[in-house]
Every structure is written in structure tokens, then in C-alpha cells.
Image 1 (cartoon, rainbow, N blue to C red):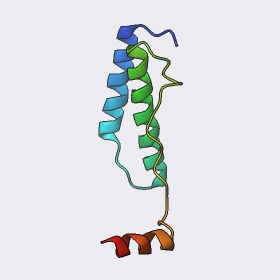
Image 2: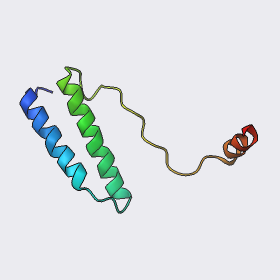
Image 3: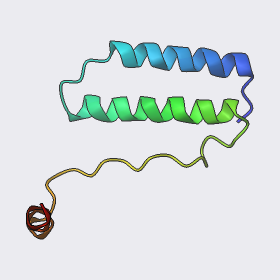
Image 4: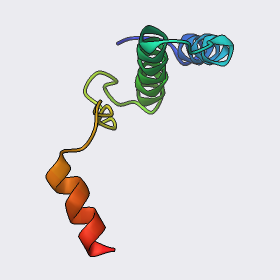
Length: 78
């Protein structure tokens, strides 16, 4: 990416400030929060000398309920 360490640290600070001010009221706000968190992860990867866009990150959460057969399976195990 080609950012200096100082610029990357400043961008991380700015993104973290925005994250702290963000009030989540709907799905769009949640998407924005996840995007900002991804930005912080990518910038931290850049600071470590890795390629931020190619670094491994946690998979996004799946929406909705689990399938019924999986829910029933958990009940029978307990």
C-alpha cells in the first residue's frame, strides 16, 4: 500500500474515534461498523509489514436462524 508508519497510525486513530462515536440503530450502521473494523485490521496488518488486503480476517457473521435440524441436534446432545 505504501503508507508511512505515522500515516497508518493516524488513520487507525481516526477510524477508532469514528467507531467510538458510532451509534448503531439499524443494519446499515452495523455494516458501517464492520467495514470500519475491517479497515483497522487492514491498517494494523500494513503496520506489521503484511499486505493488508491479503491478510486473513475473521469471516463475517451469518444472518438468520440456524436450520431446524441443527437446532434439534443440539437439543438431543444436551
